[in-house]
Amino acid sequence: MNTELLEALNILEKEKNISKDTLLEAIEQSLLQACKNHFGKADNIIVNINPETCDFKVLSQREVVDTVEDPATQISLADAKMLDGKFDLGDIVNVEVKSKEFGRIAAGNAKNVILQKIREEERKVLYNEYFGKEREVVTGIVQRYLGRNISINLGKVDGILNENEQVKGEVFRPTERVKVYVLEVKDTPKGPKVLVSRTHPELVKRLFESEVTEVKDGIVEIKSIAREAGSRTKIAVWSNDPDVDPVGACVGMNGARVNTIVNELRGEKIDIINWDENPALLIENALSPAKVISVMADPDEKTARVIVPDYQLSLAIGKEGQNARLAARLTGFKIDIKSETQAREEGDFDYYDEEEEEGYTQGEVDEETDVYAEPEEE
Image 1 (cartoon, rainbow, N blue to C red):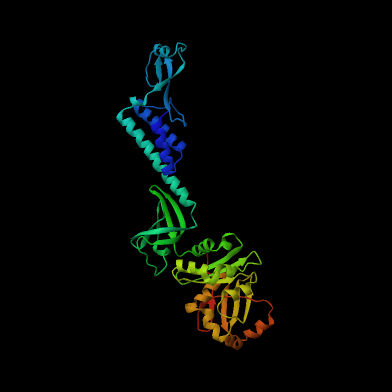
Image 2 (image 1 turned 45 degrees about the vertical axis):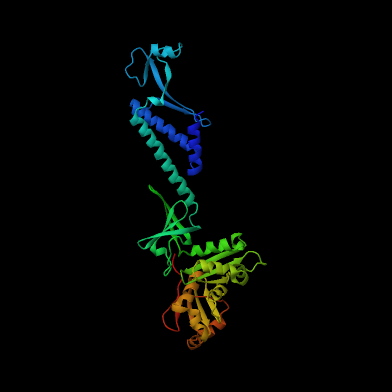
């Protein structure tokens, strides 16, 4: 039994998470390379390795001939009969090659083959490990600023938080722990390159999944999410169990659950609303905390007109149109918001009274009394 080699492979398998079979394959390839460097060719070389004991033999297949012209592939009849008297001309003889016979250069090249294989497998293992974490939230430790980008240690590799994936105003200190969303994992010659984000809407969704048991178990679903990172997020939730209040489950007792997420997002406001299949009701909920008088939605055109009380207009629009804008992204409707007074002046109020369908719209602020909010294109 080759005890030293067996122990070395076991240690590598444990520390590098590289399978023993892969390492044995690397040793086989290195021996073949050494033979090629030593003899000039390796087409007739067979390497036998016992995976249990790590004992190995290198055999050279040689043809029995009268006159040897190529010692690497041929053997004289006399030499063959010394190995076994039954051999005759034309037979193939397996001659054991001692690895100690390899020259220094051949041995060095064999060593490089093994090391290269180990590095390749280590990169592959790391890539597979972090590729499995793609589109998930992981906790990292801030390392340093790389220009305007930030290097974050994720355990075995460093992730890159690019400037455009950073929340405006967030400042990190080295050694600070932070949760990030894994955007993409790229396989490169230097190892996996992991790109992470603090602005992606899915970051909020994954945080709710980790904090709210009902969301993790699928009892409560997050149907839609709209986010302006660092400022405000709206999420629409739905319960598959009539006995479970989806909004209450996400908020938690005394706001404990949602406050944990708000703290992780450094004070970003989160509005949690009930999802509804009726687009009018959904739009009304999405414009929360503003009160709505009426909504008329056109599901085909994905447009909606909303009338709100005069004193609620600024609340429905939000600061710089944010509330209406997020509601539009959340629902996918283009929303037109008007005050009660303006609707009466333009004759829209009678139209709303006559219609049975309800609707919802969002838009950007054109004037103080006209708001048009459009859902963000994917």
